[in-house]
Image (cartoon, rainbow, N blue to C red; front, side, top):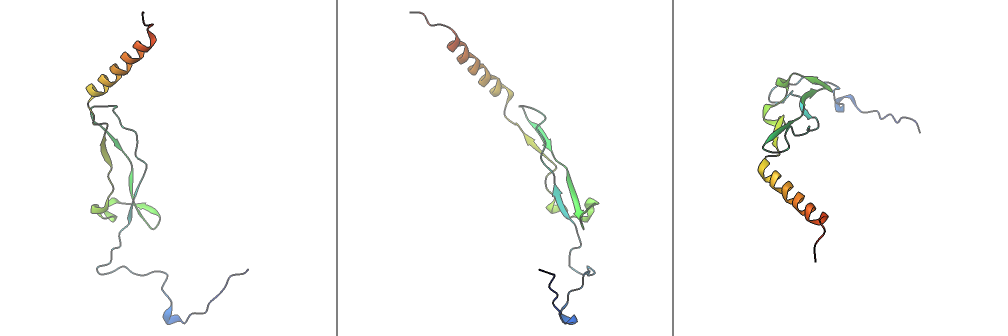
Length: 105
């Protein structure tokens, strides 16, 4: 099947490019990469990701995107106490020791 050409009256055609004026936003859109690993196992760490402002398929200055719509760059992670984690590990180790020891009669 070949390409189908439809003849549309010129007054009904859209321009390929338009000048952005007035209240219209000529800004880019935010693109967020994958979130990285937390830098701590417990006690409150942080993880981050790269965020880019994209316009016309290419990265541009962040000022070209709306600040209010920017995805997070960094967030907290593993905020639980290290003492809680240590206590849980100790309980698991105690249970494993009991299973390994022979019980007397």
